[in-house]
Structure formats: structure tokens, C-alpha cells
Image 1 (cartoon, helix red, strand yellow):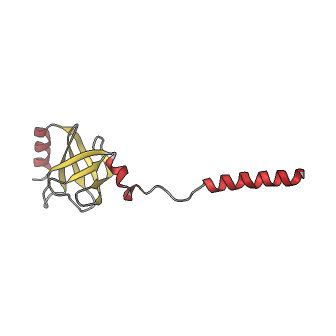
Image 2 (cartoon, rainbow, N blue to C red; image 1 turned 90 degrees about the horizontal axis):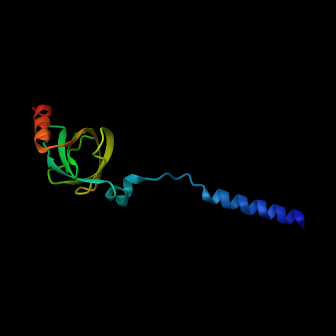
Image 3 (cartoon, helix red, strand yellow; image 1 turned 90 degrees about the vertical axis):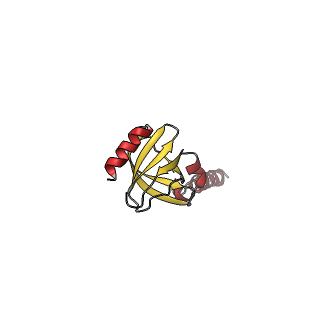
Length: 122
């Protein structure tokens, strides 16, 4: 009787532990709720001949270098982390696509953003 209780307790514990494990990773690319919790921005400058575009956020203007070959249109609403430098993914909600880009500058005034974009896209 003692062996049956011990073996059944071990089997139940093993079943609980193994059923809690999952190999599936979190796919944030397909989760719109994830992106809508990120910082929101609107594209205020975009040019098909220049890989840089300007995004207006709550904290100011950010300059992004498009590394995916896709540049969003002016007026597009995009979500992501615009408040630090580096490569990252953004969600273009207007088109429903994930784009890759590098934030080169952030928290700029309108004049600073215009000066930098003029120098980058001459």
C-alpha cells in the first residue's frame, strides 16, 4: 500500500512538472497587443530616395534608418521603442507589417530633426 501511494505521488508530481513545460517561444511579431503597449509614433517625413525617416513621438522626434528595405509612408502610425539608439523591430499598424530599423537619434526638436535629415539625405 505504501509503494502504491509513493509511486502515484511521484507520477502525479512528474505529470504536473512536465505539463507545465513548453518549448514554444513567445512570438511577439504576430501579437498586436504587444505592439500596442509600445511607444506610439507618427511618420512625419519619408522619402523613397532616402533610407531615413522621421517619427514624431510623445518625447519628440526620432530619426530611423530603414534596414529592412521598407520605408513607411508619411502619416503611418508605427509602434516600437523610439527612445534609445540601436537596431530593433517596429510595427507599422497602418500597413500591418513588422519593419526593422536603427534609431540613430531620438528626443529631438523639430528643428534638430530637420537639420539632421537634411544632412543625411542630401
